[in-house]
Amino acid sequence: MMTLRLFAAKLPDVPMVAAWYLADLAEAKGKLELFTRRSPQRLKALRENAMIESAVSSNRIEGVEIEASRAPAVVLGKPKLRDRNEEEVRGYRDALQLIHQSHQRLVVSEETIRELHSLSRGRIGDAGEYKQRDIDIIERYPDGRSRVRFKSVPANRTPEAMADLISNWSGVLDEARLHPLLAIAAFNLDFLCIHPFRDGNGRVSRLLLLLQSYHLGFEVGRYIGLERVIEQNRERYYETLEQSSQGWHEGRHDPWPYLTYLLFVVKSAYQELEQGTRSVQGRGTGPRG
Image: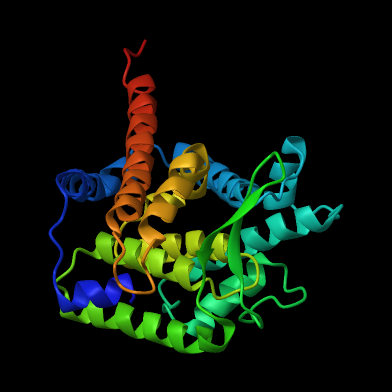
């Protein structure tokens, strides 16, 4: 059973660490407008850097890598692309641009999710199409061993599951009983457990995290790459996702490891932005001759 549906049925008892994160994020959200007034030129550089970091990190988490020296040109410029990896990084850039520029009109819908997947996969092959066969999430070890980490929703039930996810999301927002950041994190967990696409689910989940954060007023992803923060804590990402997905199909899962992890990611991004803008302010307030 989906996390959002469980939360809609009964408001959860929020663990202390998650409550602390929520309190800190409420304060950080209030400060963002002040931050953005301090140094417009610095913030322009932060936006460009966040675009590069987001596109490169989100793909690198999935094993799609490009030369570091090529990243600024691939993401911000228009050079001839060398290979499929660069095409996917450029495609993710296109999805990011859509969100940054048009988030106010982009509703969270199956159509939007398919479009983000299509863009991030370079509109090639089955981009934008739900999986056609059942897919197990496999963990492979350096010594050649492997294990099934999670069995996703079967292909023939994926359209229904996605429709339910969107409905649950709208219902939770309409009721306004659940903290919006918890709703975002729960949606993210449910999306990853459904695993609607053959490939690219992790990247789409991170694009949705950015889009939904925009919708609910948490705009730090414009200046700090949330994907890069996730990559820097990738072991914790996989660990908490596995912990919270166990028992998901039966509604017996514990969502809090993964939900708390995503709160940590957003808080870390806000902390980094605050530190960066403070350093800019400090350099600009010294004595004048």
